[in-house]
Length: 233
Image (cartoon, rainbow, N blue to C red; front, side, top):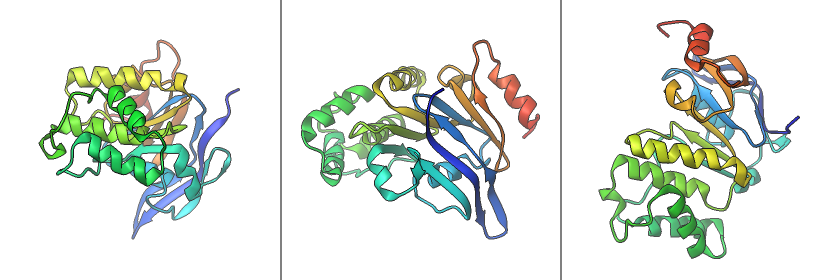
């Protein structure tokens, strides 16, 4: 039985009278690619923000690497939540240089070259990120998240803005990460794409966890999703 990298216990997040996340208890196995699935507005991004400490739960607990969440855990985590925060007047390399310095990474140049190669951005040269396509910006955000060899990578709708070839490249990249010791949590509402990547899923609807379990070979994820949350949601 694999150990658990991160879990939530009875997690809730309330914004005023609106309960965005309601009593969610997730369990993400080590070495898995875990898909957090749900329609837009289901609560996926809110959960991911709580996993990364961007927002605090109203109730409940988050555990990472077997311990209650604390800021030091961020050293072993990488994340891309919503749109990447980039300096538009700098190149891809210069953006990464800032992050390697902030993280105190040694051999920063080697680390930058490594992550640029992983996401297919080695040929951008002196091009400013303000001139990047949406997909290129997304890939650079993932490169930043991969700095420092994180043990846990959290990606919120990572295929946003990518063309079909970019999606295929990203799919291959994500599939390769568990063999490098990286557990991946990714959110998406595109079931056909996620079905080709994940081995565990959690299905969120209206802020509640409706299903969690492994993705067995031959499982029709779309059928499971519709059966779980119903049509038209």
